[in-house]
Length: 383
Figure 1 (cartoon, rainbow, N blue to C red):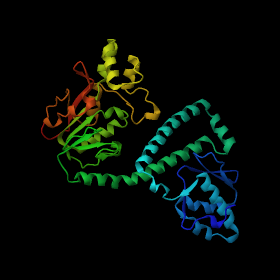
Figure 2: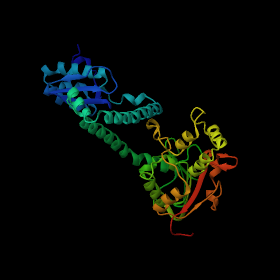
Figure 3: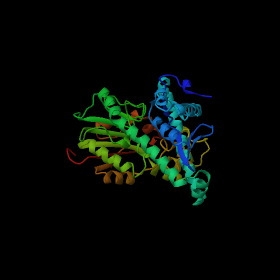
Figure 4: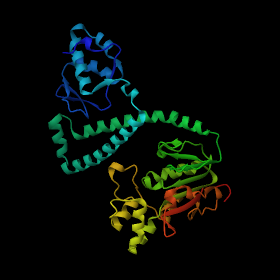
């Protein structure tokens, strides 16, 4: 049986990120979302209040020493059980784990979480109001309250990450020699592995400037001369994400600055579908390696246009498709003018003749590129 001596001197403990604390019928239950061990259960008010301090890293030996002597053995047994179940862990225990490995595992967790939330929504739709009653009878807490707790946990995690954004971006910008006074920048947003020399290359990690474009672009107003977006826009929700993003692109462009956008040409796919152009879709499958190689024209077209993305791959999936009129409208709503259709490497601006740098933009069939090329100007400056 555990006692005070089982806690090593200097051991700092904290509740694990997946620890769940619940209260039912006058008792507190503590367990984790991943372990199969039975929950720790107590109805001792002293112990409930004392354990709350481990919401932050706390020295276990010191915490035990503050208790009356007659309470220490019970508290030590509680710590031992909670550590065994994984609900309590040593603070900083991940310090020796490779961050890249942790990141990969975190992405796997997010994939599973996204899929799980979708499936939970389907379950709730199937159960209807019975879900509230069933969960209350099983654990004393209904669905709505538990969903509020999940939302609060996600909001708390996002809040902590939001506080890290400033230093994270600033260190990258300093390494790139970019600051609040930088002007005449060329921004390559959604660069992937195709870096443009002399440009600020931006994408998710591990890009030279790794960010989430939905945070807002970390550049001063009127600081960029050119912006190049190749096969990024279709990965954002339209219009809820696309509109504020394009407004932000206009903000960072100097008056008269040009944005060049390359997206899948959905009108071309519609035309090939209507003409039953089997060769067009076969060439696409060969180039992109989609599915099992046996997808129908409709499967190919709808996936390319962003219809029905898999919830587990929602970040990577296409979410919308564009023809010229739709992209033109999006740019007009964001305040751009002189919106015109272009061609592969066909910009009138030498600095934006960069399509060949992108393997995706350069993909073609019989000399006809799969992409739509569009340019637009921020009002003001030279036309």
